[in-house]
Length: 400
Ligand code: TRP
Ligand code: SF4
Image 1 (cartoon, protein in one colour):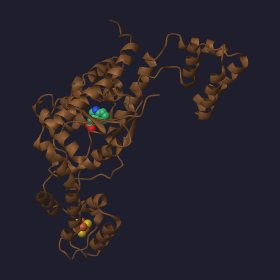
Image 2 (cartoon, protein in one colour):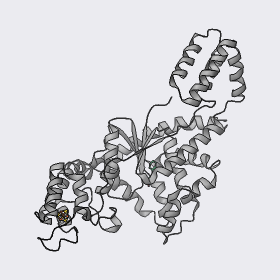
Image 3 (cartoon, helix red, strand yellow):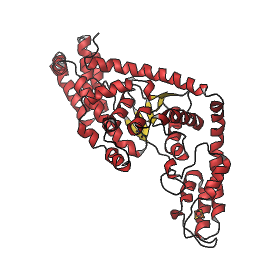
Image 4 (cartoon, protein in one colour):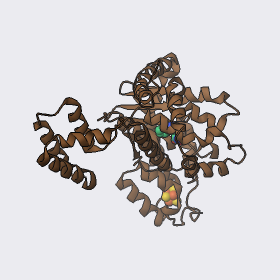
């Protein structure tokens, strides 16, 4: 009923690194040529953990946007915007909060994890508990069908689906819909009414699409129905509620994960990252000094790629031939580690070349980025307002 649409966001963490690229951005770039996409900076989400130091958010936002553009997110294909510039996200968040059980928020796994991990911060706040609900508003306000995310975010998407379902259930009702629909069924005449009910059950209980098609064809033929009854009978076939909000699907990033230089998760705070636009000399130095299988003390000691973070880089960056060369050479001490690392250095440098190039125009003229985002904000806001009109009406808030 609503068109396919992709929405995803990232908190503004400043300059992106290659972990972000392989874990998320590459997937965004692929999707933007397939479907309409909206990508946004979740600056309010950053406040849920940085409420005591919001001064970094502005700079991080623009740095991150330059890196998205450098990576190949294309403003002529996708809409780039900033969450706080579309204040309707906050309105929907508020309205959704009225009917969201606390337990749904408390049982989201990231909630307890984060409170424990960031124990130096007081996260016992209202805003932090509401993090996934704000995220739900971010997605539901665009009636997105797909949300590209990492697997840590899957529980958030699950919760969004429940929120959408609950909203439609509570507010998608036409007064007396069920009764009106059943009256309309009777008007079909006993034979057709029986067939209608059977086909409806087949579709709703067994998911038989043919039954739905057959029922629709029958309704097309039933000349005597009024317009209102006809619409009701169409709606009643697929459910008994209007769909105001759409349940989105998670689209997991398939790209292989790129760990940090030390084999842990790549993160700026661990000091194990390579920036998206790291300069060439620094990439070389970082890879050359990267730890390898500790068993290879001397050049003549054999090693095992399974115990080496460089191997994980090869899995992302090297073709089968090179990978075979690594495994054989490592296990037989046929190659040295420096030799083994060279193809990885070359591949990263090559990957980054177009990124440096694309970034240059935005570094030379930052107003270009501002203009792209201003257009994106407007485009996103237009879509958000359409949904909000229906939401307000469904909740009985459309009075003037
Ligand atoms: N929670 C997401 C993260 O930490 C960021 C985010 C906020 C998001 N709103 C979103 C992602 C909406 C997808 C859709 O990565
Ligand atoms: Fe790692 Fe390659 Fe050295 Fe083996 S040869 S330990 S895979 S860097």
